[in-house]
Length: 93
Image: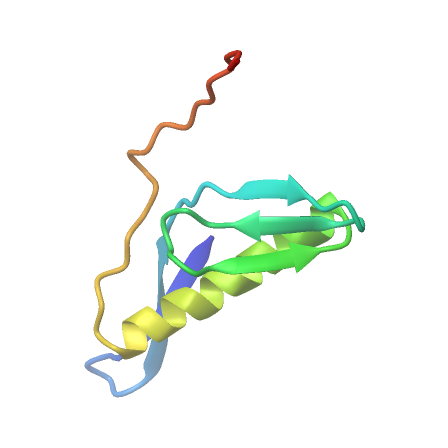
């Protein structure tokens, strides 16, 4: 995911600067079909897609909007660069 910002150069022309962010997503299949997407690093950032590829595209769009809002409000933008993802499998009686 790439988020962009604008700044004024010395020659007074606008130039786009980008910074790369990495986010883990959880794709949860829904019984009605499609996938709900959660972005754990961004609380409340949830979306949906009818296919896996659509869900991933929707996740990029949701993340972009979330980051734009954070930047607008002067909030620090988190990243999942140093996060490890794993799962556990166990039996429970």
